[in-house]
Amino acid sequence: MPGSPGPYPAYFGAKPGGTQSYGEWNPGEDTVRPVRGRHRVARQRGGTIARSRAVLGVGVMAAVGAGGMATANEDGAAAMPGMDSAADTLNSIPVLGGLLDGAPAEDTAPVTPFTSAGLTGDEAEAGPADAGEALRARIIQQADQADAGADAQVRTAAFEAAAADAAEQAAQNAEEERAAEEERQRRAEEERQRRAEEERLRQLRESYALPLSDYRISTYFGQSGAMWQTTHTGTDFAASTGTPVKNVHSGVVKEAAWAGSYGYRVIVELEDGTEVWYCHLSSMNVSTGQEVVTGETVGRVGSTGNSSGPHLHLEVLPDGQTAVDPLAWLRDKGLSI
Image 1 (cartoon, helix red, strand yellow):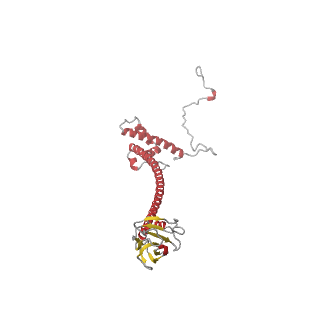
Image 2 (cartoon, one colour):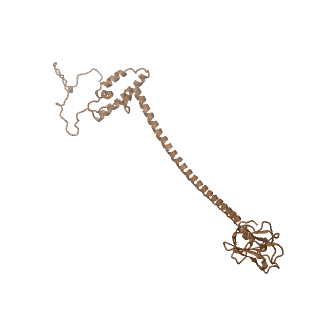
Image 3 (cartoon, rainbow, N blue to C red):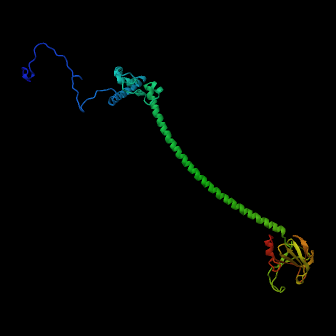
């Protein structure tokens, strides 16, 4: 208040006289009456969750700082002033010091130093700098493992795609091979049939023969003329008189005699019943009932009977009764004529 101080207000009361001193009084558990109800404050005990978390946070910061300083010192950097005293102060705290040293504190479980989290014992003993490098290596290793897993997935996908392509190619190759095999079999069958036909014709040529080796066709089958009552029933091979007449196919001589308008005639019956007539012969070299083979001489060219000149009249009767064209029949036996 402005002005000189006046006397104290009366409500402060008069200062007691004398020199009596009073001792310091602090409330305690014996003098303070306990508060009942829900407002009672419980007695503090060590190791609560809040206290542990607070200590853990401080310890982590201290550990990280200590690790960084150790790394800086090992790299040749100067130590920061006051760090030694700060470390001593941290260690002087019972609980925090225990956490930094790795020793268990009261009401707490044993704790591993924070700088060795996730590391092996050898890595932790190597010191903060080596522990940092080990942690870095561990992270790189995990990254490499992740890359390896991705590469494995890529390789698996590539392998599956390659396997699918290989299966498709194999199926295509199998289909092409099947088609090629069918084509080979078809060609082989055609070749077999061709060779079989050639063999059949060869055997026919060997088993059948032309009646004359030197001749000229003078009259064909079915022609009409004044010399025949109807039409010509055979084929005329003009040749010189006395030219040998060969047996067309093996068989038995059914007749060898004079036959009127046919002159001297030899009839050979084949195994299938076909009759071959050799007519207008000048002479006969076989007799009835004789077996003859292909190419054997049965007579000679002449002009006996109803004939206008030397020639061989050849008739072929497959059923022994009805004549057919001898040239067509000979060609059917594989002969060229």
